[in-house]
Length: 302
Image (cartoon, rainbow, N blue to C red; front, side):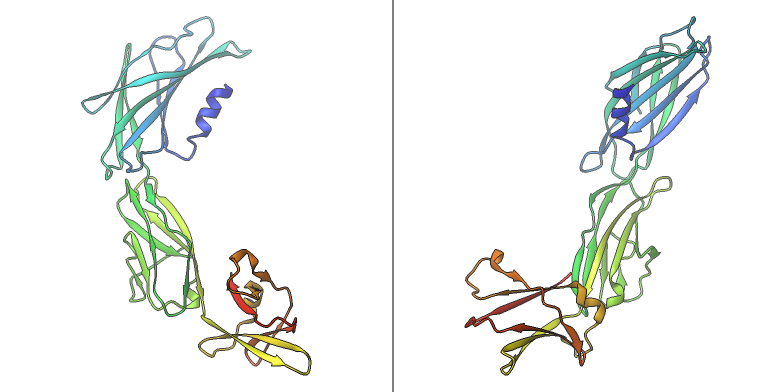
């Protein structure tokens, strides 16, 4: 059963829908389960993995009836048997497993539910399928400055539409958020409060899909240098461009780098480890004068 388990672990995040059939003859029951594989990039074609399980008395029927054909609407679907297994427990109950793969099945991208027909030696059954939303484009983490506009995008098939959320709450179109039920969410005049996790829900009556991304919003900063001739040192200042006090909770998010020549490559920038503090609403950090004729600074905010 190890091989069977490995095959199914690959498809756990996809549709599971089971149908139990009570058959005539000496078989206790038969269970047929379908697992849809990932769709093609355009969401239009899938393969279906069909697991058939039958329990019998060990001294009676030990072979499953063969699967003769698979149809999707009026179209015949190719299929093959991938694996079979037979086990018997101490109570004399035997279990048969057979795994089939059917497909590909071509499906329009707007279809949400469907079915295939399985035809066996002495019976046939319709097996329901649910096509979960398939994201061909997912939102990505975005940085932006206060006062600017940001956009998050997604595209998906097998969905009835979209709903964007911020921190788990559905967004409403209010002149600040635009496209809250579209594939592209636009946020105008960004503020610090707009930062955080954004989730797009691909709506589906049975199996909605979600993808998320983080929007980081920063206040623009400006750098300055103050020379301390008496102390043979200088002070690097980091201030908010809008004149508001620099926030203390942002200090730990700063990375400060220096270099003595702009002709050097990016790997030559040295990260500074000196500590500083906020004074009069400006973050200040003091460095000793190392005698370099020139020095350049770069500040990154995580």
